[in-house]
Every structure is written in C-alpha cells, then in structure tokens.
Amino acid sequence: MFIVIFLILGILILVLQTTFLQLLPVWLGKPDILFLLIVYISCQSEILRGAVVVLLLGLLMDVFSGVFLGLYPVIYLLVFAFIRGISRRVALNEFAYQVSLALISYLFVSIGMFLFSYSLAPDTPPQWSWGAIVLQLLILAVIGGPVVGIFDSITNFYKSTRASGRLPGTRSANRFK
Image (cartoon, rainbow, N blue to C red):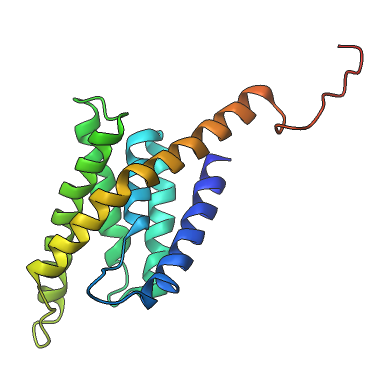
C-alpha cells in the first residue's frame, strides 16, 4: 500500500511539475517537488519499498522529460543510496535535516546530470548556470518545510488507517461496541 500511495502522489506531482509549473516565468524558477518526494521517501521508508518507488518515479520522469533514457532512475537511485547511507549515522526525521539534505543532494544531482549529459553528448554541451542552480536551491529551501510537512501528514494518515484497519469516518461492523 505504501508503494501505491507514494507512486500515485509522485505521478500527481510529476504531472503538476511538467505541466502547470512550466508556465511559471523563468526568473521565478520552477520548483522540483518530485525531488523533495525522493528525499522524503529516502529518509522515511524501508529500503526495498523506497527503492522500488524511487526507481518507478525515475522511470516515469524519464518518460515525461528524459533526454537520455535511464539517467533519472540512476540518479534517483544514487540519491536514495546516498541518503540511506547517511541516515544510518544521523537521525533524519526532522524537517530541517531533510530540507538541508535535499539541498545538498540537489547540488550533487545537478553536477552529476551535467557531467553525464556532457559525457554522453559532447557535441552539444548542456547549459550550466550558477544563477539557475542557486535559484532552484532557494526555491527548494523555501518550499521544503511545508512540502515535507504535507508528505509527513500523508504518511501519518497512512499509518493511522493501517493501524486501525479501516478508513477514518467509517463505522465498525460491530454495532454493540
């Protein structure tokens, strides 16, 4: 059920990110909410479930906007492994840690995407702009707290429905209780 919930959430975020958020002006930036979801899943989930969701979201990202097939799944799985490796040593359940980890990871992902793209197509080097990267990091820092809070509330809702065995607002079958 965890995989289905976060996969549906990831698809909704991906559709929002590749349609409506692309209409924002360039100077305002385009937030990468899917990356925040990848970081959140890396911090909060079990290894196998998280890796499956991250891999599927990477494949979907490739389908929506990938230039080189397989680049997003590899990058997202590397981010997942990096964050899981760090989370063994440090408790990453707090918002501030997750957002700062997302910022550091996003910087490394940007560098990695640039290097991969440059090595795969040296004839047409990709554009590197520190201004765009810093703007994206600022956007992630500003929206990171509220977005991680929303993801946390979805996780808590999932855990509460799983613990009770039924959806909130429905009555139990035992009317004498």
